[in-house]
Length: 419
Ligand code: BJ8
Image (cartoon, rainbow, N blue to C red; front, side, top):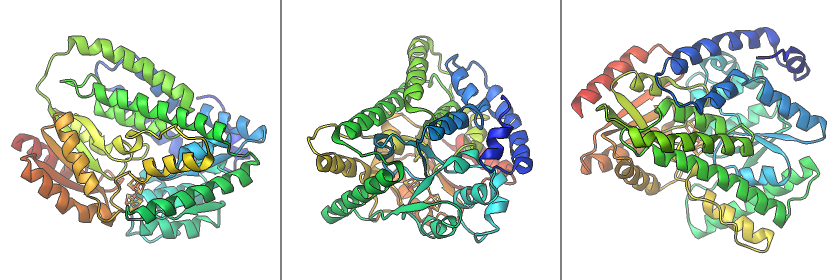
């Protein structure tokens, strides 16, 4: 990585602490990713993105801001990227997946809460995430109680706009969500000084749909037996999708898929078990579960998570003549995401069953970040539905620490023997 210390200093990054973070990542990445055998050539771009994770992309954000552009941080796949793009702002998904940030997070939040929330808060409080430091505004949402209350703390550090997400899917909830999208458009227009027009919003919808389509293409390739790419690599690609330049990302991902199209012609089944992961998201650099699974005789072939199918399934319709038409299209697509914060949330169970057939999985791991109650409660329903279809399932509740890695490995091993 080049020398970005001046840039980090200008952003108010705590350099000393940040150095410690930068020292951990290359080793973790090397051990987890670069030791994989027979990786596609096209992964070189994604290796480069990780090598430059706090460098080149931060510089791009900085250049954008120097020209008067704005950067907006988000934490949830319900926040419509299209609105940010249409106002010529850059959106970055900030969900933090490292144990490194937990200690600082616990300075302002209770210890017994979801690691994802503690980590993003710690990244801001400690001033160790240059992405966070580059944000002119954060768009939060009322998905879970932890996040909802965390915005109140975060507001002391950075401007936050909160979208009130309905948690049922009745006609009036779609109306309410449309009105939230209208409000966020007004907020983003105010921040950027740019009007969101029918044309700019349509263009943004096209950009976001192209990203969804490229991710879908990658996931479709994983349906081959064996999958021509590891679950670890796919998880990384999904994580990078949240903050990379969308046009470049689509181009590079499609190049990788072209290569995989060739690969699938010469595949030899090595008898690895095919697993689905469902549950809570895995933010960068949370590779813990995938790395344990793929270190055994198994392959993760699909993730029904927000760093998986929930991020890209269903496109936004580009049809419509007015802003209101397009807002309705956005509301229709986004409110259809099946997050456990909804009640009822039977759509998620339907998705899990559908994907387990489509990807021909041997078993499902329901992955739960500790203290995420909505997903933990929903586990019983997931388990029941899968058992009825004779699909083996196990529940793993964990955080970002590595202390339980050995125990999880033993449990996954036993699960693989059983299926
Ligand atoms: S759409 S899963 S990204 S809310 S922060 S709910 S893990 S306790 S992230 Fe999420 Fe949007 Fe839903 Fe997806 Fe649980 Fe933690 Fe809350 Fe979390």
